[in-house]
Amino acid sequence: MKKKIRRKVGDVVQISLPDGRYAYGRLYRDASVGIYRTITNEPQNPPIGSRDFRFHVGLYEDLVTSGKFPIVGRDPFENPESEWPPPYYMRDKISGEYSVYHKGEIRKASESECKGLEEAAVWDLQHIVDRIMQNSDQS
Image (cartoon, rainbow, N blue to C red; front, side, top):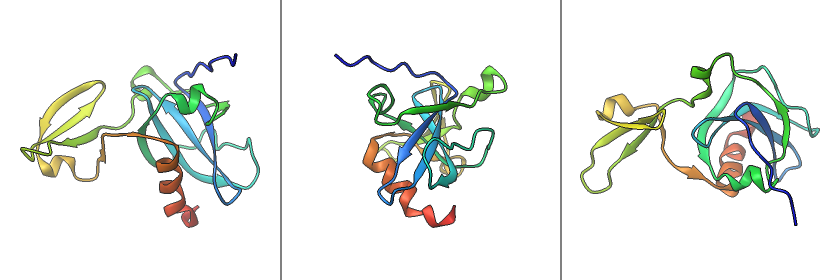
């Protein structure tokens, strides 16, 4: 029986890309990950200390706990407040009303407040890889 991997805020995970390169993500609270802009050709070479991220999204816990995204480093946060990902927006499909989700709380918001925020969602392996590959030439 395989041992379940325990994730910690500040762990850095490696994401294998279909072109043989590697991307990296820093784990945040709220089951979120910040995907570093840097992509490398060799494994286990995360950009620890960089604060340049492509995007932040929620991710399925099993990507880390199963080892699909292996933990390859640690990039600690400066303080507990910085462990939270940036705010996400939500839009009700029926009413069209907007909300902001941040630090485990939801509050009503205007459409203009939500501009530039990432939509709240939980992403799986292929979605994260596809999004990285969409703009991987910018690394």
